[in-house]
Length: 443
Picture 1 (cartoon, one colour):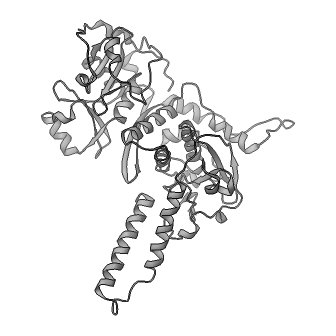
Picture 2: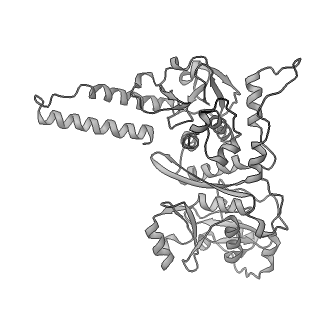
Picture 3: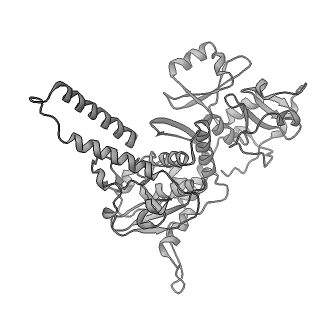
């Protein structure tokens, strides 16, 4: 994110800190540390892993502390605020998941909760509760795998103006039938820059692009200076994956679920002439149509190291993400499998019902879930090389089981003639089918 103002890290050194004998990571669980022998860089020692995360700029610190948060019920949180949190939550970041995901820091020194309302609040909290630490002692604390590293020192910012031009965007989605939440900070002016940026391909008549479609997409895949929104999204997803010990395929599925759960923009879909969103616009507005969400998924999965492509279907006026996979599982042996972005579908599944540009999940036609017949002409554009997604065989196994169960259920026993055990058996099959279907569609 582009911020022209700079942060006065030097203020941290105005405080007097005592650094005694060698400090060990376990002793500093949940603490916020200030690197007093350097430029006052701030670190958070995550209590579960006992590893340190660099807090960076105010908005980065705010987002990271929320991404590492633990969801709690409102009733529990109210009890903690009235008294104090239990010792097992010392140093944790608590998220009020039944409301708007508000974040609170549990101070290990007194188990009191401190509200992380805005980036400036989180930054002020670091100055107030931070513990000075030497460079040598800091090195005793392992660095978290997905932690950023100090790169730039920021000076001279008016903290009262810190929140001007900034908007917090909270995202909530489901993966493996569990709700995931995180937030990032986006810049209002940068959104306006993208909104007003060119969205029409222009070229000299005597020098047209080699591929008009790819040249058009290049417009929206360009990233403006100071836009680090994709990096923030990737870090948030990687943090979730790390905390849950997800595999590479699961990380890809997590990232896709994030995009799939961004609301579909029905009003935009009704417009006679659509103008694509840049990925930043889709994030800022938290909505988009198939092309908008496909571009966002393309950028995120590419940053995660996967091979990606943009799939266009002009006959049905639709687009989807192409995710690199084994040829045997790909569309027309292209090396890219179909991934729907307008609704939750497992990778590889091709929706058989698309209405107003959005894929619907109401069909039971499991036999055609991997058929390209409904897509018409297929264009595979902007191909990149990267990691392969290897989960398609598992998806096909799930579809095969759903299809088998559905066929069994199409012939229910006659209640007037069936035995009690036959009816019980049939009902259990219904329960099994419904459970698998809910899991398949994340319902």
